[in-house]
Length: 306
Ligand SMILES: Nc1nc2c(ncn2[C@@H]2O[C@H](COP(=O)(O)OP(=O)(O)OP(=O)(O)O)[C@@H](O)[C@H]2O)c(=O)[nH]1
Ligand SMILES: [Mg+2]
Image 1: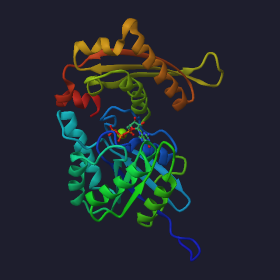
Image 2: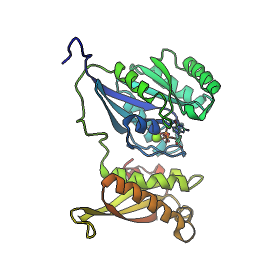
Image 3: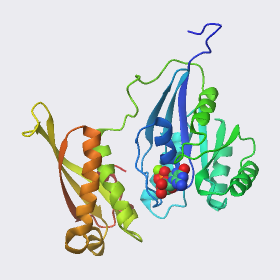
Image 4: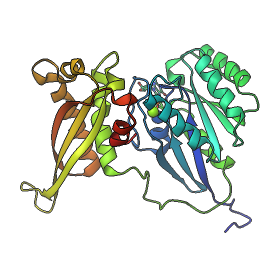
């Protein structure tokens, strides 16, 4: 495959790990150039391993965005950490994300210890550099270099401004083994549509509720009906029925809002995302329901897909 003029094609898997809210999914989306995972300022936004594919002339990066590693307080939390550990054992490179605008903490030290057991090279990325001063970024680079001994590279990046994103891509491709592309050119993720739709509802909902409600919220798609769009010949019209599960009766009004104002806003934002994703007009029906203490119930977790 390689010629003297052309370097060999490289491909492989790169896991993004870090504590909750470190900016892993935002960085994944920036690298892929498309929204493959949802983002919020609430911890534990990501609840499964999400693959995003970066296609470059010299190589293909298959990113695996993972849930934030944290001290688990529920069975859900334990399962999320297990997702991360399973991913770590199976990738070519690890990207350890640490935000520039927060001090290095015990959570980061805990992750650094776990990474010592892993064979794959570790690239430390100092994220959110746009949100910190130059001095802060510099001090963070020093701190993370001390924290992760033997790191393959330490790179400051801003997924929001795009600063150093391309450089990171080149650097990651350089660390991958030689090999042919693993995904076809047009594919950027292998997320199924149903899960993407559910996540597009959870994303605006997370930002609109407070305290423990983000943790208590899960979304399932109960029905998807596709039919010809009566208003646009040749196009599809998609009807989506979804359930928003909370853990307690008292959480229901927080999600509904006064006169249903909050759930209405969630629906409007989710529908816009769905129409972009599906390229079709969407009618969205949302219902809020109570699934008692599901975070600690194995059967309920399975039903919700966790
Ligand atoms: N200013 C700035 N904010 C960022 C950047 N990257 C992420 N954020 C913000 O940080 C918050 C968390 O981002 P996420 O990408 O959801 O973080 P995560 O590490 O995937 O979080 P979990 O899935 O909960 O583990 C969001 O409010 C993002 O908008 C960045 O480069 N600059
Ligand atoms: Mg995430």
